Image 1 (spheres, rainbow, N blue to C red):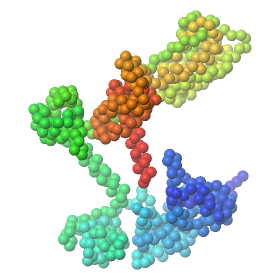
Image 2 (image 1 turned 135 degrees about the horizontal axis):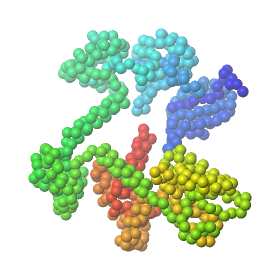
Image 3 (image 1 turned 90 degrees about the vertical axis):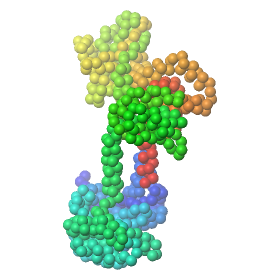
Length: 627
């Protein structure tokens, strides 16, 4: 059935909705116009909070048109909504055809008022005046359906006076297509009294034609000047002349600042880049001479720290970190030469001072420490995964196999079965995704094992397998094997006397969870080995006798100093309490695993980095949701 190009639309987009608006409320309001087919309120897929817009599909196009006419800019939960037709093809919206930019609007102009100004020129697709901190800005956008309507609006409305403001109406230009030439200037350090727009225009009008001018004022009745304003020239060269002539010039006992007006996001970006450059230059300046000292006793201040390290060379500066008068237990010493810093590290690292063993090393930036910890943890985990060896299990023995002989899953073996016997498909043991070499290999193994052991074994497939004793397979998530030099080394299964081969294969596969558990947790094997010492067993037994609250407190006392030490090295010492709490929650279900991690510094560092990443991502999501 061909698509009818002349069919009237029946779908509406509704936006600028308050967070409290629900699907039920939209159905009640829009359903009063006519029968509604579907309503969809768009939400964040994680937080499920409303994104402030949705879609209404009416049964009848006439009802959709009536809803657009009556409900556009209707107040829903103390906020006017915007309603417009849904355009399946985004070309018109993205192309910018017929889209106008209108600035210098009177203060407090709303979307509806802007639409009433321009509706005489033709059909309007959408009207939008942005907000900042809940207040409407003095510019907006009007998108016409046809470009000729936009041309007519520019011709008549550009330069038109509305409530004392001269409108500037021009075509909207996307950010990436805008010229880099500056015409709009920001001026500060202006007088806050006895200064008018006429004086402002006279000051800057000498350099060229001005399209608009604005002095910032308070919203009080007196309209007090804030001391800054904006000047927009027609030509970029005129703006450049004004900057060169007036920036830094004294005007009424103040030095003017005149520069390009940048949006807030550009100013933030520039400041961030500047701070990053300053930070990098500072670290480069002190590279190799700045020494970090940890585990500093509380009675050691800067003076005593200088006495300890001055014998190794000239000290430029030193500090012992304090927070609200509380000793943080670490500090820094900056030497004049790298040789002095090297001598101090060599002599003072692991030296006991006032009952504490010092940790002395070159100071590193937070980013560098985090990167090194992450690299260390990644290498540790990769090494653990690649060192998992084949596992052997005992199963009942089929007839032709000698007792105690190891067989391999998928390895060709002589099979005794009645004529026309067909083996049923076998369930496969699952292996975690990190054990797969790649997806393509995974698909290959799935086909090879499924067919060879299912249909192939019952239709002479065993003979083919016997002819290809050196065959190659690829790993798959359902099969457990190791790759060595490109050839698959299959997992051995020890088969004792007393069972038939099909049952051996089925039982071995059904008990694949044992294989999976050992392949899936190589780190747990290391932890288990550590936890099997008599000391760890005694500690575990003592902890198990405690009630849950006492046990949690005891494990926390062991865990907190190590977590704090790790986080202080990363400059995140204030998060030690939260990270310890997160690790304790994990340890409640696996006490033995937690006891094995505590003495293992490498594993503990990895867990701390993981928990810190989760915590920071959660905080970023909360901040983004609040905005």
